[in-house]
Amino acid sequence: MDTSESSTEPQAEEPAPERAVPGPSGPSDPSRTAGPSGQSRPRGLRRWAMDTRPLRRPAYRRLWASTAVTAVGSQLTAVAVPKQIYDITGSSAWVGAASLAGLLPLIVFALWGGAIADAMDRRKLLLITNTGIAVTSVLFWAQAVTGLDSVAVLMVLLAVQQAFWGLNAPARSASIARLVPEEELPAANALGSTVMQTGQIAGPLLAGALIPVVGLAELYLIDALALCVTVWAVHRLPALPPLDATVARRAGLREILDGFRYISGHAVLLLSFVADIVAMVLGMPRALFPQLAAETYASYDEGFALGLLFAAIPIGAVAGGLFSGAFSRARRHGWMVIGSVVVWGVAVTGFGLSDSLWIAVAFLAVAGIADMVSMVFRGAILLSVATDEMRGRMQGVFTVVVAGGPRLADVLHGTAGSAFGPRTAVAGGGLLVVVVMLALAAAMPALRRYRV
Figure 1 (cartoon, helix red, strand yellow):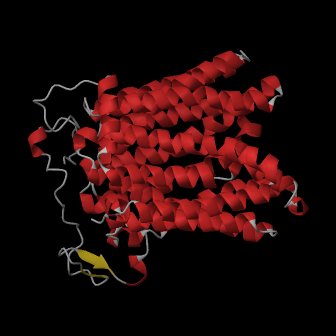
Figure 2: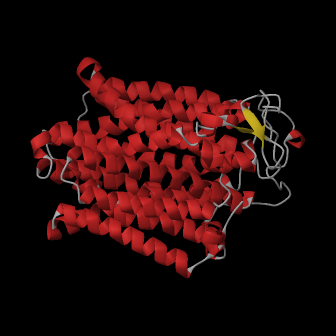
Figure 3: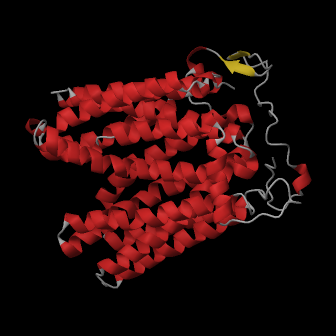
């Protein structure tokens, strides 16, 4: 793996992706002890703090920095688009329709983008797609500053942006295994997930503060400028072509289907996807947050309660990331996934049974911590088990599952909440997560037996 400053270094200088690279901390560091592999291990409180070893590798640091910048910038656009659509139409239905308009392109291009990421230099693909997203943000700015006020234009731009993001995400995630050694994959995933969750908190707060001061158009422009930083950071990455350059590669329907056949032939990969589907589809209660804020927690002020409910899971996830040092020492990655999904279900059940807003928020924060653990170890399993020529397609499926699961949950929980009441729907969904996950773990041992 080439972590040099230049992106034009010879490919021969890139170490094999599966080779463990010694960390920079030596045995003379008094805060660390030797681990079983001969590497130093932190002691005391430092063993729980976030493992930042991947950031010592220049190439990964650039990729992570680009993620940190866009994590906030992208949330500005994510707030501005529905706000502008609502300002134009005065209808929440149109806001919901816009969300669905971006879903189909995301699904299609994430699957196709995974196949492309396995067929070409991933750095080039990241350059192309990040540039495309930046241009789309500039077009968002142009339509806003000219006062076009066209919902159709906004929905088309959103669809195009989601298509570029679908092409980008698999290549970005699949590249991590080429930039850090296998033993640092959990730490690298924790670092990336933490900045993404931080962006989901800071971005909307920043957007809410900026809209009255600078207006919607400037939010799009800020996002576009942030994406320019991303393009520069990706340009400084080493080349990431397929490892076997002698094999001709395509990125068509057959290659996409090959990815699904690959998943079906590797039970631990299949179960890692199913675990996330179980947790998100059965146990993501966000569609019921408005009703719960208006009815169950109305005494706390509806707007205040709603904001806390939406912020609680990301806050918990960030807290889990900041204290993720233990992730790097875990070897039973399968059990970490199973345990985190079960904890998610228990926490969601507790949330559904809570009369107090603060207890409810505490349960959601615990759910956020569990979600962070699940994300980290599912990502590590995908990058470790899949071969490099399949990692892009696996990440494409991963992107579809992560994006589609919560949307399906919105439909399921919205329907169940109307039929049985919001608290019953939430608590019942959490219990179903626990029961289904434990049943899967018992019936299919591949995940619980998997370890590094």
